[in-house]
Structure formats: structure tokens, C-alpha cells
Length: 87
Image (tube, rainbow, N blue to C red; front, side, top):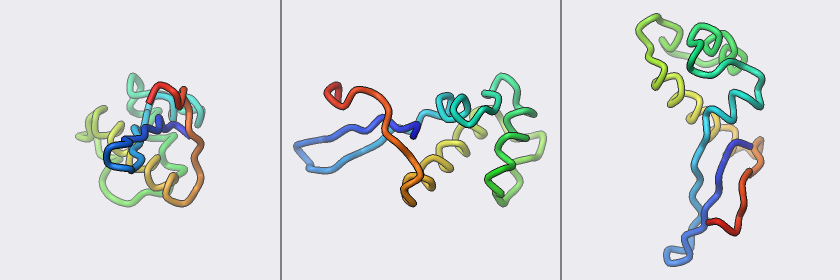
């Protein structure tokens, strides 16, 4: 889920682009416009580190969301979205 999958035929590998805004929508949590709400929503993933501190930027929260998406993809908890014919 929340991945746009692309196939590079010249290298014969698949790459993905995590989309944090779509993930936030699907998870039912606020986007980066509401950093405190986003932090509250991300607590469900039981993350370690200092990401709850006030100094953490909106962009860092999106980067954290991307890391969660990749982690979930590695264990098979995602679905691909988008048009596979668009590459």
C-alpha cells in the first residue's frame, strides 16, 4: 500500500516510491499540516527514537513515514497503487 512501483527494464529491478500523504490518508491520521496529530497517529507503529520531540520537522515526519512504508513493504504489508503501465 502507498507505493508507486516502477520497473526499470534496463537494470531488471523494481523500485518503489513511498507516498507519505497517501499513507496518512489510508491510515486515517493527519498529514503534515497537523504535526502533533501526525505524531499521535504514528505512535501506533511503536517507533523508537526522539521523533516525538518538538524539534522534529514536518519533512522529517514524512521521511519517518516513508521508512515505515518501506519496513511494512519488506514484510508484505503493502499494496501497490497507481497504473503499472505508466512505469
